[in-house]
Length: 203
Image 1: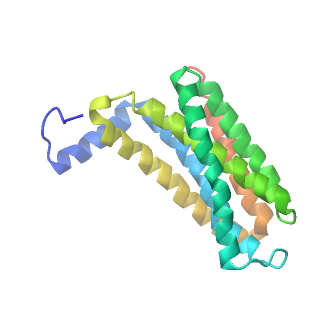
Image 2: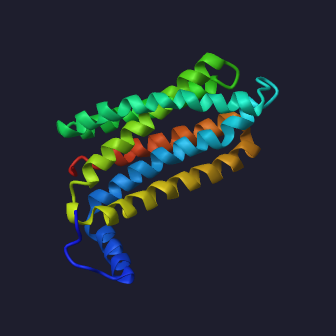
């Protein structure tokens, strides 16, 4: 959509901050997205260390192939979009966080079991991608005339969560190994469930 009126860069930044203050739905969806991406980043930050470690001993080329299992997340895009269109975003989001939480149970077993690791990767990507699509479907309906600024608010929170997840993953890998990393990812998913449960009166 063309802008309703030309604005300078500083004015656009100010209006973006204003949107964050005026649209709690956008901020809440950004928190959901940030927690999901924190779990995702926590996993992928340390996954290569596990796969290159003494139990698996894979080289970089083989480890890189594991990212292909994440393609399964693309399958969730249409499903999540249709659920959002039908007004089922809230229960669908609950399902995404539950799947995310379950995926870290499998990933914890994946420390020594390859099948569990692969299943966990697939479920994690399905859940994170699905939640992301649900979030986008809702925030873009808030202010169609300011979609880029709405996206800026959402993605700032989204990537802040991812950066925090990566940083904590590296620390916890050194402190407690793979199980500590999985506890971090599960904790992010559990926190998402708590935020979801506390938002019953909100759309």
